[in-house]
Length: 310
Image (tube, rainbow, N blue to C red; front, side, top):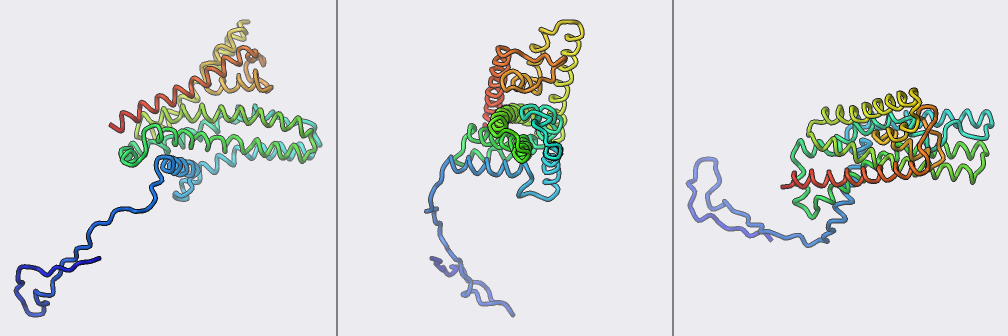
């Protein structure tokens, strides 16, 4: 309730001005917050939701929506064309296996990671808003988990959307439901691993610099150079008759890691030279390496943001 206190010092009246005894100080007091306190879980969920929406430009300017939506369309259009061809020709199989589709479109996926990973974390570093997050009931692990999960979810939407288009198209073409469902499930597993791995690598690189442009360039360089170098070395090894080294060279690129897993464990075709993909045993090595890299990326992000929050 407002309490009015008259001023203790007289005010000299002048022509056209109110008298001094009309001056008042309104003491409205201080009121604490009496509403519900939702805690860390709500804050973590809110940060996840906001970061996921931001990965597709939702809630931001129209210009921010152009690139992610365009890349999503680029991912889905080839799948729609394949479905149209399969329905028209009454084919019994899709031209591209579900688990291999993301490998073929890896350039588009890498570009999406390069554009959205810096957007997710670099702005917080550049504008020094990270300590503000930790002034609330949220800890470093909550921030890292929310950002990691949001980008991985955005990537899963990007890579899983075309698979859904292929699956629906296969059912419309009256292909075997059980067979297509099995292959679709294998494809979902492949893109889930890819989403986690690419999100972790992209966020680790982007968290190093507050400059978004540098982060974009660094992510593109790591993804493209590693894939190009590994593919070249695999081709050289295969041309020299050392095909046994081809699967092991594939351990040094994110794209070939996922390719090895989907060909060895998920029934997909390999893009390795001469189609010589890893064996089942080597596929489990690939899986262990991928899971280890995901855990390592999460640990590096935790260490990075613990330093920032100090």
